[in-house]
Length: 129
Image (cartoon, rainbow, N blue to C red):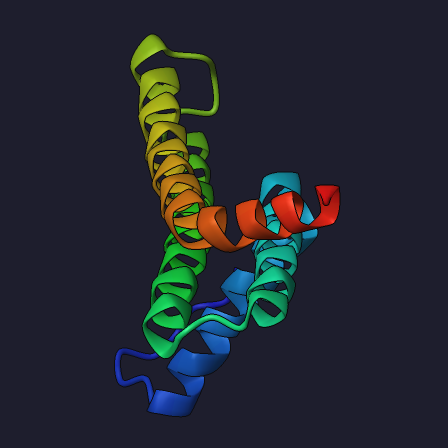
């Protein structure tokens, strides 16, 4: 690992953040799944012709899940660094971090049901006629 000078520029910090996201993409299957699912939701949102408020809520929901997944990756890395061998508390820290991802994912599903439920239900009923 390289060391960073104490005075980081904005562009250097942005590059480091990009590197962290790239690491998450390369190493975390759940991160890849959430990116895929978020992309699919954006396509459905476009198809449903959402209002701008609905777009904002969907983007916030997707962003929250992805951010939680990145934070979960960071927690797992730090726990592995501090405690490379199994320890129940280290395992619990990882479980709690994964739980945060689950909470944001469930929250996003509920938001999606509120936003997509009515137009999809209308589409289903119209298709059955």
